[in-house]
Image (cartoon, rainbow over all chains, first blue to last red; front, side):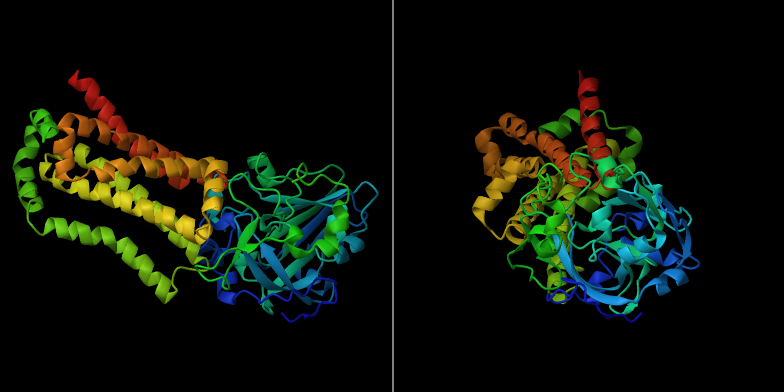
Length: 268
Length: 220
C-alpha cells in the first residue's frame, strides 16, 4: 500500500521508526486477548473483506462506505508518527492513510455535530478476547469535532508501506498521534457524529483513571503509571534511562491551540 | 518438626502405603539439588532471553513481569507444601519448604531490582517517590520487606536462637506476604481491567490460606 510523503505539518517525525517486527508483535488489541503477544497470535481469524464503515448521526450524507471506496477516497500518504501508550512505552510508526478530515468533509456534518464517535468491530466469532468481560464491548472512542478535523488525525490503512496487519487494526483504524494510543480505535466499523460528548470505553470502565481527552501529558500522572518518561521500544537499550515524555507527544506546535484556556489536569 | 507430629495422627490411613514410597523418593539426596536447579530455570531462561533477544519488543517489561509472576508461583508452591503434606502424607516435602520460601524471596528481590533498575534507572529519589505515590508499588514493596526477616532467619541456628515457637510465629508473616502480593497484582492489573490471571492466583492462595483456617478450626 504505497503512500506519498505527507505534506501535513508535523506528519513526518524525524525519530527512527520502530522495527516492523516490534510494531506488529507488541499490540494492545483486547478483542484478541490482553497479552501484548495475543493480537499477533490470534488476529489471523479476522476477516477484513468485505468491510464497510457506517457513517451516521448528525451528517447530511450518512451511508455505508465499503473498504474499496475508502481506499480511493483520498490520496494515500505516508506519515511517521510517534505513538505513546498510556503504559509508558512508545513507538514510531510509518502509517499509510489520509486525514480523517477528508471523510468528514464528504459526509457534511450538520451544525449539531460536536463530537465524533468511533465504534470498532465486536464479533465473537472472529475475536476470542470478547469472551472476557474486560470492557463493555464494542470498544468505543471519541474525539471533539475540531480534534477529528485536525489534519494530523488520520485513518490508517497500512504501515511500513504494507496493508495494515490484522493485529494493528486492519483494515482501517484511527491514529491520533498526540493522544495516548488507546484513543486510536482499531478495526472501525462505524463513525457516528453526535451532539453530546460520547462516553469512551475506558472512561466507562475506570473513570478515575481515564478521561475523554487523554492527551499525552507528562504533567498529569496516571494513578498507575508515571507519565513523565517513556521507553522507546526497539531503540532505548534495556538499561538506558527512560526518555522524557513531551507535551502532546511532541505535537504541541500543531495541536496546542486546540486546548487553549483548558485546564488539562481537569480535562485529562 | 513440631507441626508434623501434631498433624501426623490425622493423616488418612489410605495414603500411608503409597506415601511411604513417595516419601522415600523425596528423601533421596538428589531431590534438593534438583529442585534448586529447577527453581533457577526461569531466571536462566530470562538471562538467556536478554542475550538472545527473545524477550519481545519490550524486554524490560518482560523481565519485570516474569520475575513478578515467578515470585507469585513460588509463593503458591511454598504455601502448598504443608497442605499437600497433610492431604497426601508426603511429609518429606517439608525438607523443600525452606528452599522454596527462599526462592520466593529471591525472585521477589529480582522483581524489585528489575523495577528499580529498568523502570526507574536506579534513581533512588524517583523510586521512593513512586513507592509513596502508587499504592500497588507500596503494597508490593511491603510484601518484599516483610519477607526479608523471614529470609534472614531461615537457617537452623536462627531457629534455635529464636526458639521454635517464636520462629514459627515470625514466619506466619508469610500469610500477610501472600495477601499483600495478591493485592499488589490486583491493583496493578486493575489499571487495565485485566483480572483473569489475578483471579487464578487469588483462588490458589485463597484456598491455601483457607485450608489453614479450616485446620485451625478443626483442631480446636
